[in-house]
Structure formats: C-alpha cells, structure tokens
Image 1 (cartoon, rainbow, N blue to C red):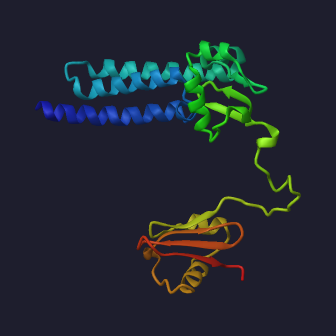
Image 2 (cartoon, rainbow, N blue to C red):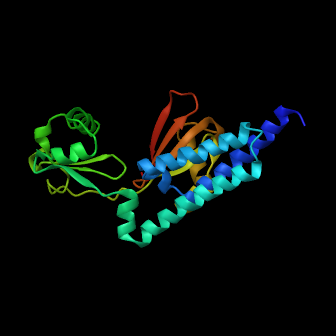
Image 3 (cartoon, rainbow, N blue to C red):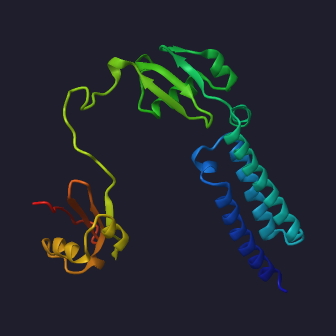
Length: 237
C-alpha cells in the first residue's frame, strides 16, 4: 500500500479515536484546565499525531498508549470526586493572594508570580487600581478571582430597591436560515405564528433570516443575512 494511503488511513483512525477519548474525559478537561490536565492533553494529542504519521510505529501499541493515558486521566478525575484529599493532591487548592487589600508575597513566590504578573491578571478582570481590591484568590487552574472593596463594587437594582423582571434564556427560533422546531415547541408557539411576526417586517422567506431570537419579554430579534439589517419586533402588543 502506498505510504500516503497508509498515512491517510492512520490519520482517520487517530482523529476519530482522539475524538472518542476526549468525549470520555469530559468537559472538565477544558473548563477547569489545570497544568497537569494541559500536559495530559498534549501527551494524548502527541500520541495521536504519532499514530497518524509515524508509519513505522505499531498502530495497536500507539492506540493502547492513548487509551491508558485516557483511562488514568478519568480515574484521577473520579478519585478527585470521591476524595477531597485526592482532589487537593491532584488539582491543588485555591490560594488567597490578596487578603484585606494586602498582597500575600509568600503565595506569589510559591506560584512563581511577580508583581507584574499579578497586576496583569487584575487588569484582565478590569481592575487597574490595586487599592480597589479586598480579596483575590488564585484558583487551581491559574485564574484569578477578585472581590472588590464594598465601596468600589457596582450598584445593583437590589441596592437601589428597584424591582426587576425575570430574565431567562432566549429561544433561537431561526439559525442560519433554518427553522428550529424544537425551540418553537419549547415556547409553545407555531410556525404560523413566527411567519406572521416576520410578515410585519415584510419577510416572506425564513431562509433570508440569519438569526431570529425570542426573549422572555416577548421581543423577537431578527438579524438578516444581508449583514446590515436587524429588527426587533414586540410580539406581545
């Protein structure tokens, strides 16, 4: 068999095997990516690339290696769920890097962070003045969680005793010109109702609509495919 054909076949195998293994590991590998998770992901991906182009390597042996690394990652994740101690060992613990407005330099040194690194992480949270910070916690995934001092926190409707309405998730009724019947059913509406609303703006073909989104207040937002026209239709009038 030509070498190109072998590479193509092995690439297909590696691609779909990697897809299956990533699904088995779960979203935690991405949403709460720790340094160890990062290394595990790179290693499994490296094995997949080896399976793809290193035609001298044994296919089954490489696949077995990928499976073992995946199994170990899943096993450690399950151990972390069952045991708080193991979770601390595997993932680490959050550390307070700013407490009562004072920087904990020991935590900075332990995590190999400089003052510039800390200030950069604060700026990524839209905090430019260190004096505004009450607490800052360095999470297991390396991200910084910040609590501002009470006098620096933004006002909320509750602070002003202003009543608010319920804000749920909007329903995407049309996506890229395709009608989403499941979304229509979830809000207990029909295709005829939607077409009636579209005719208010002289829209006769659903395929001309890039996105139609109905919010919980009954407003239908429409973004046309022409890249410049949008409408907001109040449907409860």
